[in-house]
Image (tube, rainbow, N blue to C red; front, side, top):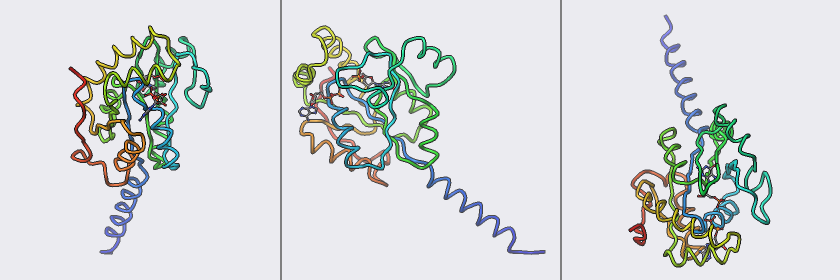
Length: 221
Ligand code: ADP
Ligand code: 5GP
């Protein structure tokens, strides 16, 4: 009888487990009320962490000036989106501000299985769906410093009509009310400071549940 056979195979299996763990990337989920600066922060984060993969969502919202298909979003029509729902193509999806938004399941699985850290910019409904599927996901909520500043940012961006801005501000109150479900809260007052906080959260080993939660202005009431 050989005594070292079992231990060799156990060692091989342990090594495979380790590889599997190493190969599995980490999932970072970023939510914020519209206008809080999430797109700006994501752009800066991606410049500072070029290894980070980013999931481009599918949406039925029409492109804003300057947005490109396949860069900011994949812009699709409602028939294509609902067909995707029927086919189970979205790992999560939601209706936000009257339009459908969804994340492609195949892309998420491929990136995580290849061991890439992945950043998702999705709303609070989508984040809740993803957390159920990926309990280890690191969820981050971006807060504006105040509701007045949020309105100013939406107006300054100049991409939405007054009616759309009002709708987004009403929705913001609901989203902010859900912030306590997130593992981390980052206030986007000074851009560079917010990016540094996000980089700390994304740093390897810096995302266990007790880490990084910061106090935030109380805008939700
Ligand atoms: P979101 O993606 O959350 O809807 P954006 O990234 O488009 O928001 O930002 C909304 C507006 O606010 C943009 O004009 C952006 O340049 C501006 N902005 C973002 N972060 C800051 C900040 N920390 N200070 C000042 N302006 C900001
Ligand atoms: P916007 O129209 O301003 O680009 O995005 C509106 C909202 O939709 C934002 O809160 C954004 O995070 C969210 N969103 C973008 N992509 C997705 C997605 O794939 N799924 C979900 N659930 N929300 C998304």
